[in-house]
Image (tube, rainbow, N blue to C red; front, side):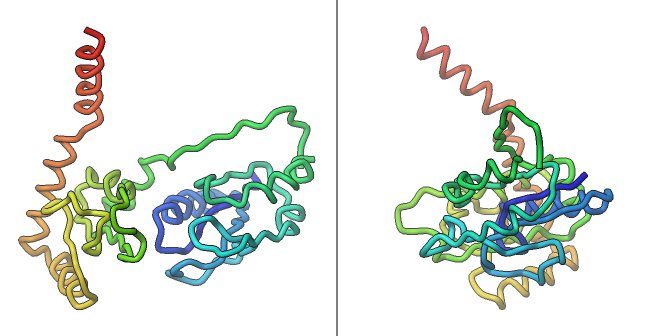
Length: 230
């Protein structure tokens, strides 16, 4: 298939990670992929030849940047949009009828969903460590944040390392926290050597995942609903 994706890409970002894992699997499967990406945000590697940087996003821009030509000139069967609230929707909507003209559909179905977890867990199970770096400047004082990219991966039982920020204020032994590059290097060495701290971290992560399992949380909601209704 000819596939296109509008998403962050090759950036230190959970959205980028999910997009890359799925997108690269598509290319391995022989599908043709085009990625429409925003301007570079904390780049982690060079872009592949199928990545076109032609827009900004709500996460990091002062004025909207949107080049319509790549969207209009790319032939695709499916366009997937990741983290739709970050996308410059107004200029995209203006040209969408022209993009769709690549078809005879009489409707548009908009979906917001996470990538399949099976693929993500396959990578985690093959890894020594899951590194999720967050800058302290990414949160404002008093702002409520949820580290989704960390929480959804704790159950893989791969040790998680992350910077000591507000993103993980409620996690303690479940993740390995660092405050400097030297501390990060030290933790990585311990992870690669299978240090005792790794086993402790994995055990605490397992306990957290079991204690906050979807089944348990769902039952607690039902219990709450029954009390409110009764």
